[in-house]
Length: 276
Image (cartoon, rainbow, N blue to C red; front, top):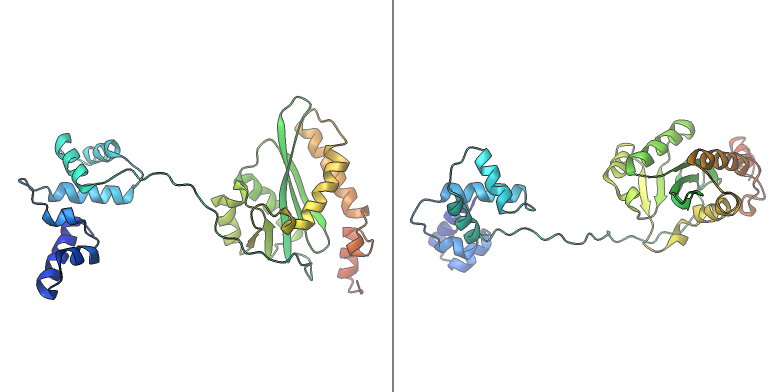
């Protein structure tokens, strides 16, 4: 509601309810100065337009607001608009530090079937030229299968969504995905995609990588066998060696927690309905 409308409401409350001016202004969210403001000129339209633009764009300063008003066809003098702007006390909102919502600690439990919970994470390394790259790892917590491993020089949210979509086309859609609080997983494109696909995002607590323990252990194996064991000249070599590792890991890497079976072997036993 515009300030002039709030002032009319406040005047009605004072008159009909007998409340104080201070109480009436508080109820309608009106600055006390606006109650007493009586301009020699009628600044109602200037006040209304300034308030409308400031509420729509609270991070914009006076110059932006004034230029927008001029482009909309308003011919008010700059000094007049600035006077009203200062009187209203419209200030550029300071940029505050974003804080993560509180994450609830959840026990790291083994799913009862495939596609119940996937885990995702990133790893970093560099080429022999010194250029840094990152690898996106995605696994199924049920049988520890590496579903997707992709290396690239940058990993914006849209690229993560592309890799996730590729994995879903091959393996089906998970009920949930466990991730840390990195910017890629907090990005609007990633969050929106999971909402549309009805995939629950299980964020771990900041600084608690053990809460994503399945993929953390996988990352350690990948680093020892690939990143620390090879020197790479380009990203193509990274992806070629990574894919070779992924296939061998899924087919032959024994897991004590899987009864010494590899991820593929464990999945095959489950799909045949045999006791695990």
